[in-house]
Length: 498
Image (tube, rainbow, N blue to C red; front, side):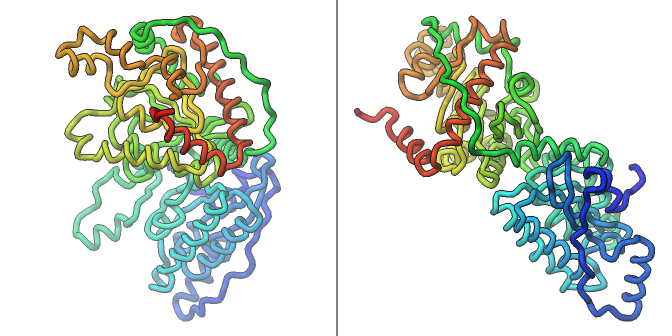
């Protein structure tokens, strides 16, 4: 753990030089007396600030942002009535001025000297943050050492993007209180930033020196314009060879085939990878990120076939992480891009008991009703409900050798023919390949492979990125009500009599 910076020193590190403008007036009078009044006087003298929270605005790489930071030197960063009033006023001003908000929490929790009145301030703070997010404004959180109690259980846990300080103790109940209440120490290594990251509760663990860089990349996506983006000319549609379904399936399974991470590396900018559900789960089979394709910002949900091969098939946690991405897109008014590339969801006791079928249903329900623009890229394998859970979208793009099927063809063969030897025949009969998906109205556009993406990964990813940018700009220009109605009609018509 590095030496703890004060709140002002942290903000000066993160913001452009000389840009911080304090918003704080005198703290509200809490009628402190006796020893508590003496403690407040000593805290002001020792810390150099007049309360445990400071707020203001400044510039981050030239972009104006609102900021709020805790000061541990002031009564261990504890939050009482005055600190809560100052923080709430700062959040409300950020909302009124339509500024993104970057907060840096560090606190021992509720100020015990003020009792229950201080405790219920969590509600006021949370209400202000909810209004800020409801206005479609970004809320970024940096959790420092230590962040505990009511601060962690309110503004510390509501970020669109949440980063922890390396080695920071972050937890609901402080270990000293736990030991006093239960007579033995809290297990070591639990309330540590790195463990919370592993559990999907933090998006990253980074030192303060890197906070400006990740916040700037996140805000480049989160505050990017959604309207008036330059259009590219109509993309030409290449002639496609009539490749048998089984050949496409074989090609889609090549280890050299580019996946979602390579797609982002080659074709996207300002990529910020997020992590986990925020509720104690992280599944490496799903990648959640903020990114831009050209000028178009988006939230990306991508199935990562390589990590599925190493760590096992996607479980229900991956689908809950996907639903976090859907909520982000809805809250921030960002388009959602889903990338399908999976041999299928987990088939296991843990998956069944974890509610995998219900999570597939909830993903489908949320996608078909999402207010945000939606775009799907069928990149490779598309097996079963795990693939279908990310498919319903306003527009669906398909790589030439990608495919979509209720089961792997070998499984379909086992059901129909009681062997796996008829897999190629079943793939053809089930119309799983891109050309058939296009003719059946399941996909809208095919990205050509020349003649196999595995042999030209960089060029293929660039072509796919151009298509995604083109489709995103078109979707952002459509009136939201028309787009949602068209989505409903699209899936209502599939398979219906003409």
